[in-house]
Amino acid sequence: MAFGLYVHFPFCKNRCSYCDFYKELHSPELEKEFYTALKIETELVARNQAVIDNEIGTIFIGGGTPTLTSIKRLTDWLKLLKKHFSLAPDIEFSIENNPEFVTPEKLQAFKDLGVTRPVYGVQSFNEKLLKLLDRKHQPFAVHKAIYLTNVIGFNNFGVDLIFGLPGQTTRMLSDDIDQLVDLEPPHISFYQLTVEPGTILADKVTSGKLKMPDQELSLALYKGGCRQLTDSGYKRYEVSSFAKEGFECRHNMGYWEGGDYIGLGPSAHSFIQGQRYANIADIHIYIQSLKRKQRPLVKERISHSDRMMEAIMLGLRTSRGIDRHQFASRFGVSLEQKLDKEQYLIFLESGHLVSDPDSLRLSDEGIFLADEITRRLIK
Ligand code: SF4
Image (cartoon, rainbow, N blue to C red):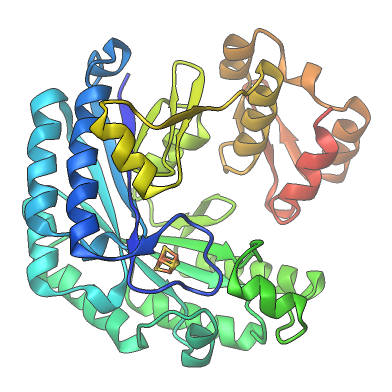
């Protein structure tokens, strides 16, 4: 079966206030060392029989800010990748971009290298909110990047939008969605802002300088945003993911459906044949370890029971829900055996859960309460 490949490009030009992804400030020297290590890591992974017997179905280069990459180094690494692995003929190849760094030359180079799906961190069109997030682009940079995407001839691209920002009203979000929909992106990720410990945002919220929207407003923002997106022709296929018909992100679907994936680069995660690994989130240790021809892996000890919980949690976030037959053959128990019977019956009765012989999923109303329902359902 095809597997997914994720590459973490761990460099940014600045640190956004809300972000807890692993990243370092970009320097060409460190980037060079990163690519040298990435090539060694790719060769080490290629020795794994379970991996090379299968083809790569999707590639996702995330970060960090992959738009900053040297094209020459990316090209060299891709050559090496193709030497060791077969890529599916219909591969989905995504790369994340910060709009301010997009140029016609860079986008054309991505296309020539086989990228099928640039993804843009739009987040908002409201300059005040962008500033609060410490995002450095101006709204016009998004328009320019998407104009170039169309001119260069990408058939597919994605955008990320954040809601639930301090001071954001339903009107502000609706304006953002109006502007975004006008640009006709085939895929929209619609994320709620979360306060991650150790970020600048967390400091400001803790010290009272910023106030996050309360639960009622957050739900109103999410519900209103979902309605506006579906009214504009997008289908919600996961709690935070909307797409025009046929443009669902196959790479992410692989994660949610329990498929195998390999993660390369510092902090990247892998899941192969039921075993989960994470690379260390430190570029210097990553480079040093690969110089010694060792993958900087931290094996995650995840029990059988935890994996079942995860499958329930991820499955309920998708519009298809949990496939009962797949669940039973993967874990050797029926789905019902892992659910709290009383809560299960309550949510079926209230219409938040929809059950049929093949699947269990959340209804449109249930999806707004996905986290709460999942928490109460899992035994
Ligand atoms: S550009 Fe992206 S990865 Fe980099 S700091 Fe900002 S949010 Fe985080």
